[in-house]
Amino acid sequence: MKNRPSAEWLALPESQIALIAEHQGIAPVPVGAIAKSLGLAVKVATLPVDISGEIKPDTHASAGFQIRVNKHEAKTRQRFTIAHEIAHFLLHKHLIKDGLTDSILYRSKLTNKREAEANRLAADILMPWSLVDSWRTGLKGVDIRSLAPQLASYLEVSEVALKIRLGINGVEE
Ligand SMILES: [Zn+2]
Image (cartoon, rainbow, N blue to C red; front, side):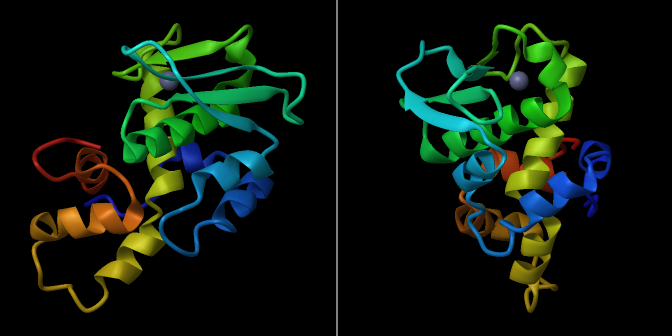
């Protein structure tokens, strides 16, 4: 288990880290509130079935962008998508231009390398190690695999996203 934040997280300005960390004290991490505090508008919308979310210019939002997530996807999935779009805003703002649309595989007009960056930062936003570690206190001897369903529900993330985060089931982070 690579129990440390991503390079993308560590490269953020301290002010942004502080702003996000302020919301990470209790689970589930309020990803909508994080977006709002960054000045982003968030809308749950009907999007095409193969689209999970998007971020596009919005003159009414103070940061200049709005995030839309597909209302037909599971809540846990919507939460990850919002975190993923926040990550695009933090890491790739200059590349958003007239909008970025993410497929259900989190593929967009950006390169897969940039999509992987957004996924890693999204994991740091939604599943901070501080919460994982404090939840595991007293459960140290227990195999993390058997705890994954409860931990995923505690963090309100999908088991798939959690397992990638924990580097279990042979999936590399
Ligand atoms: Zn993306």
